Length: 152
Image (tube, rainbow, N blue to C red):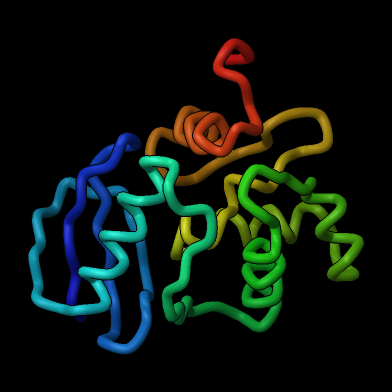
């Protein structure tokens, strides 16, 4: 599968595609530079997001997961830039449990593009499995204007 390394304000990311759609984004120090027009576009959109010029990604996505996880990831994509939802709110909408929604968030193979950072616990940030954990989540929420830097 083609993959590309990119540097971001949150660290080094590797993006992967199957040639037709993005399949994974992962924090990794691995250096990859496969030729792939989709990876070129994904890298450009991520750079625009981190510079504050892009609020909605327009990329074909193919995350591998169960039907439930697919439903959670679809619901996360409906959360607009600069907005948040709680695990409980999402669970109510999906007729599930907050813990199951949290598990799907933690299994998200396309963080940032599928914005699991926009899903919070009822009493705070909740968790984040990518990058530097909660520090990465805080920085993403700060970038989107949701979380003032003074709160962390």
